Length: 179
Length: 179
DNA sequence: TAGTACATGTAACAGGTTACATGATTGA
DNA sequence: TCAATCATGTAACCTGTTACATGTACTA
Image 1 (cartoon, helix red, strand yellow):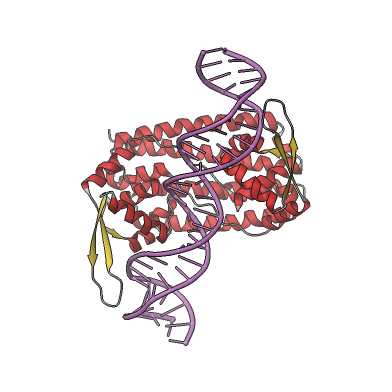
Image 2 (cartoon, rainbow over the protein chains, first blue to last red):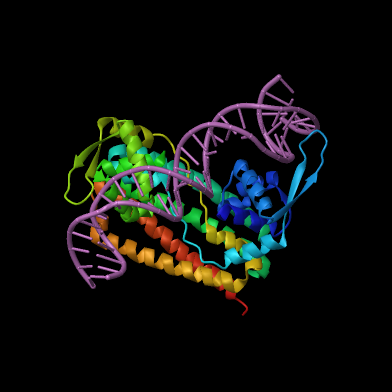
């Protein structure tokens, strides 16, 4: 049910098309939620059935109609109710750690290369987050209450990437010690 | 396909029953992979079809036969081949951050309580990891190559929990500032 | 002229969750 | 006597991924 609520969370602020939601999930909100366009279109259809959102079709020339989705009062009530229920800590599933776990069979070189590749990816993601931070949260210690909430999700993303990079360094050191 | 490889990773070391695999996924290996018994039984059936594992039925009194699964040479080859292919960084999906993102509508109190709840859970998980560390990796700076690999996965888990706890503290501070 | 952005969708499949089902043994 | 542990499984459902499909407009 959480994809539904992630979509509602975005619609609370302003109406969106499925297309724009897809881009948002691939962008800023991507630090804590991911979804493909197929998932989003399917979910929007369900949300409409439940009357949590309404659609307005906006005709266009040479393109499919834009379908602009807005959250309803019912949708907003549902979101608040959902937010007030405790939720689980998310389950971790790390493919790279499956490899590391069996590193003795996969081979130290293989593992080190993969760790280095991941370190690179995390470094790039971190740079991206830092750029968002500069652009949208310049005066970080004087944010309004409304701005603080999205900033905290970005902070979580930044911490997460830094922590991965540090683990990669630690792992590489432990694996190359004595060579 | 990664559940299959997570199972193979465990079988590389020694044979397992589906039941024992379930417990292992709920325990130590749970720091980087989770699976329910239904998933595991279904996956084991597939692995057997592909001849990546073999089964030995062990009759018991008053209980279903134990089915002890062992990895085959083919399974081992497959695992090494898989480990040598680059894999993606895992996608993050954090339900709590969906709530935090829309915190202005959910309400600061609601959000703070939920963050505090999660802080507690992360603290307990961390304590659990520290205990595993004490028990199985006592002499942390003098581990054999074989021990280093699983230790690194535990280190990742420990760092992850610490990082979450620190983020919770940071978030709570930012949200209660000026009250 | 090739690729990207815009804008939606169907279909098939893979992976994950929840409920139900069986039935002996052991410990509180 | 109640719950937990041992040990397996079926079925239904929900979520997520991949491939395919359409067709314009703009940019390199």
